[in-house]
Structure formats: C-alpha cells, structure tokens
Length: 121
Image (cartoon, rainbow, N blue to C red):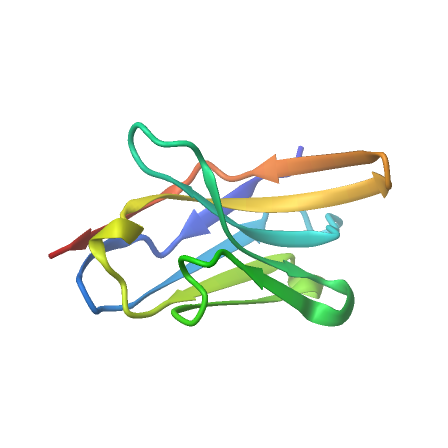
C-alpha cells in the first residue's frame, strides 16, 4: 500500500514561514494530482492547494492565495507547500493528498497522517 508522509510542520510566529513536504512511499506510485488540506479542531477539513501534474496547473483556496505556493516533482511523487505570511488562522493539521484517476467516474484519494502547524500571535 502507498503511504504519504508529511514533514515540515512546527511552531512559528505570525508573519513567519514554513515549508511542508510530502512524499509517497512507493516509487511506482503515480497520481493525477497532489495537494494539501488542513483541519483545525472542531472544524471541517478544508482544501488548501493542489497541483495537477498535467500542465502543472496549480489551485489555491482563496484564504491562502498569494501567501502559499505549491510545487512538486511528479517523477518523485513529491509535493511541497511554501507558506509565507502565516497568521494564527492558518493553525491546523495539514494533510497531504494524492488523487489517482482510474476513470473519470472512479477517483481514489490517498491521505497522509498529517503534520501540525501552529502559528502564534
């Protein structure tokens, strides 16, 4: 089975930066897209950013656009999230996501275990 492993979380003061990394455990794994979601206590998991490998199109939630940058290497099944100008509202567990599209009607998502990001005021 494929595992997604996140790293790079931690504590940072408001206005600071962090860079998250995620890599798939299996070299033979391939995905249609990879990205990041986050979940704060008592809240629903929300989309943050994603990269579609075909064309390297990137997508961002309105709340992070202009502050976060997603990048990655499809050949290495690796994705990064550069987070700048962090604020306390960014505090959450960040989860790596990989989407595999078998057919347009059959899509499977893989998830990492998450990495904590805490932004102090």
